[in-house]
Amino acid sequence: MSYRRQKQGDMTVKTSPCHIFGAGRVRFLEAGDDDYFGTYIRDEFINPDDEFKIDEDDHYLVVKLRRYGETFGALEIGAFQQPEKINDYANFALSIARVSALAISNSVQYELLERSRDEVAYISYHDSLTGLYNRNYFNQETSQHPIPAQACAFVCDIDGLKRVNDDYGHAWGDELITAAGRVLKKAFRETDLVARVGGDEFYIIGYDCDLTVAANLQQRIFSSISSHNESVGDAVLRLSLSVGYCHVDEANPQKDQPWTWEALFHQADQRMYAQKTEKKSK
Image (cartoon, rainbow, N blue to C red; front, top):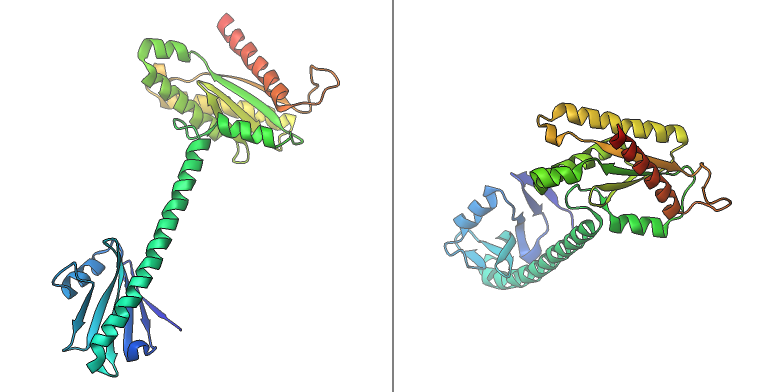
């Protein structure tokens, strides 16, 4: 069966030259958010709860595709070869419309279920404050995948967050955490894994990242921080991060032992704290 599509507003209309029901005109009108469909239904149906309408004078009928009170569209059928059988056609069309509405309703429910599953999966793997990956996702990735060649572990921590929380409140602290998330997402590449693993601590895996790229990424973090600080008006929201990183090409302090994700991030964490201590001593 071939169809010719027309557009009326955002509503899809299908017309068919086939003589279903012995009809010369069959149109399917898809319900949408536009005004056309609603206006059409109001014009055709005196009682909005009616499922179908028969116009014996003009020899056409309109059948709604409706289930559980929701209307998905309507069939308009006319130009019958035997108009005297219009009531029989109406009963047949109503049966088809009910089956069609069931199929559409099931499809809609399935899409909603899939969307709900996607939303649950997103929530379970993302941090609600920054939108970055969370510890759950980070742990899953590092437990399921070995360390690839040219990988680098970064650990970042916000400086002075406790003081901001204590002096100004956690809403201000959350602003700093959110800003740190934006800065890190901007500094790293789409192929890198950027995660907030808790509090003010961020873990990042740089992939396809040699030692030169690792140093450049660290510099990009500090450049992004400078850009952020130039844009904020309140000194409380000025951001400072301590950053440490460790590359798989570096020697493991545990001699003759291959790197593990835990050891790699532990070394990066140690370097981050060394940088933080150095800042405090100045």
